[in-house]
Every structure is written in structure tokens, then in C-alpha cells.
Image 1 (tube, one colour):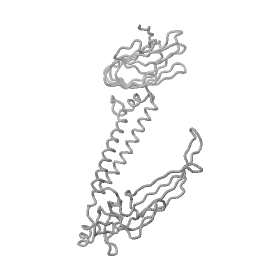
Image 2: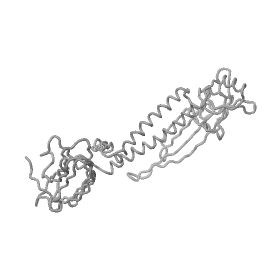
Image 3: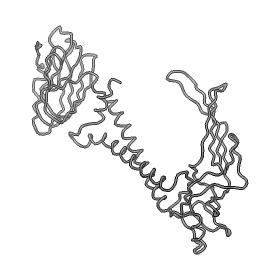
Image 4: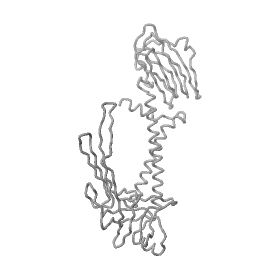
Length: 369
């Protein structure tokens, strides 16, 4: 059954006719309801294609909608839910009409009662501008973070590729012929005559970092906060030899970034909160790859941090081989690039008219979550 419909009152008597060419829509309308009516209502907009933000007020009831379907002209309707005839429907329409004709009409009853198969019915909970904005913000933030990560990874890869790959035996031979410092990457085993003893796990090592923190929870509900207090934090590193067969080179690890360490961690309940202990060690006998500057120092071949003003300032100790390390960096670069591109797509609809908005799509797919 088709319910009777009541055309808009004299305050909205001028029909909105914005055809095929893209036109800006900026309308304030007042649509009267049948006297004594109380029940569901549907606001038919007509056959349109475009992008609109619509605010509907009926007394104390306010609703927000967004129409964003540039693909085709089709009938659109807003399912308003219960309304009262005591107040007219105050409607504010802003946006861009790409094609079709915008004709606001009130129908009594739910939109599903008379809608055709090709109708696009927009429900009350369809659009939440704050949530869509939040989705767009987080997507943009993730994209920017990944651009920064991508730049860092490019520089990382440049540093790794600019360091020439040598064996220790080759380094000894090359520097004997030409004793000038070189930026290199070299692989070998960690050796030392008098190793350190890690304070927690008692591991023979050339580097350790021990950290103990206490975590306590204060407050309840929304005021709940976790407080972290550092009880202990200290580290040590010593000179060691990088050995490969009968050849070795002295490593001065000051300021080296050590990613080849083994990490141990444990959490225990305490009188107040939790005590978390962590220890990272570089054990003796570990096979590592070191990227740094090699040179003679006091008639001894040493591997150390590059000195300014050299562009290659990376001095790092890795567990991976050079090939594996380069492959991991390239994978991280590809991943960061893809995420950055996806993040930028969430902002393009604000610049490119008619483009489908992924933020609205995600909102539609997750509105019931």
C-alpha cells in the first residue's frame, strides 16, 4: 500500500531543480506534516546522483545523514523513524548535485513500505560525521607514519648498500695495502678473553642491558591509570673481537646500535602492582654482522662508529646476514609504501569530486560493531 504523501509547505514551495551539470546545493527547507500525525516517516529526495550532507530536525529530534554515491542516478530516501506533527521537519541540505533532480517529499510510513528495488534507503544510524572524520584522521595518521618509516628505511638501505661487504681476511689484506678507513659490513663470531656476566641471567656476554620497572594501577573505570616506575636500569658494553677462522678484528662498540641481542623478560606480582624485569644480552659466540668504519688505530685494526662529517653514520650490530637484512628492509619499504598509499586514499575524496569515500565505506561496514 502506498501511503499518502504531503508536499512541503509554503516555506519550501520552490522545488530544487539542479540538473546534469555539477551544482552546489545549499538549501534550508521546512516540510510540514499532516496534523496529528505521529509515527514513522520517510523523506524522499528524488532521483539524484551526488554528494550531500543533510541535517534533519523535528522538535528535539535531530538526525544527520550523508549521501555519497556518484556512480548512478537513482531514487534516494531518508528513513527518519518516528516523527511528530507538532513541529515541521527543518531540513538543511549541503553538497553537490552531479545529475538528476532533488525533490524533497515526505511519505508517511517506513521507506521499505513503498520503495522500489533500485532505491537507496539511508537509515538513521547510517552516517556519523564524527566517526567518519575519526576514521579519516587515523588513516591519514597511519599513512604519515608510514611515509616517515619509508624514508627511514630508504636511508637504512642506502647505508647498508654503501657499506662494502668484506670478510675479515679480505679486510686485513686490503688495509695492509692501503691503510685508509673504509665503511664496511663484515660478519664473524663474537669473542673476548674476559667476558661480562649479565646480572640477571648470568650469561657470558660483551653487552647487557637490565631494566626493572614496577607497574601499578590507580583508580577505576574511566579514571583508571597505569603508573610505571623504573626501579633499575643499567647497561655495560666492552671491547671484543670479531673472529672468522684464524682472522679477527677488534670492535669498539661505543654508541653501536645492537639489534643482535637476546632478550629475556619476566613479570611477577608484587605488593603493589607488577614487577617486570627484562635483560638484553649479546652473548659470547654469537655470529653477527657489523656495519661500521674500519681503520688502523694505534697499529691495531678496529671497527668503530663513523666520524663526522661522513654521511654514513650508521654503526649497528645485526644478527642477520647482509642478504637477509637487505631483503627485510626492502619488504618493510614495500609494506610502508602500500600503507602510505592506502592512507592517502582516505583524503582524496575531499579533493577529487565524485570519488568514492573509503572512510564512509568503512563506517557502513562497521556501523553495527
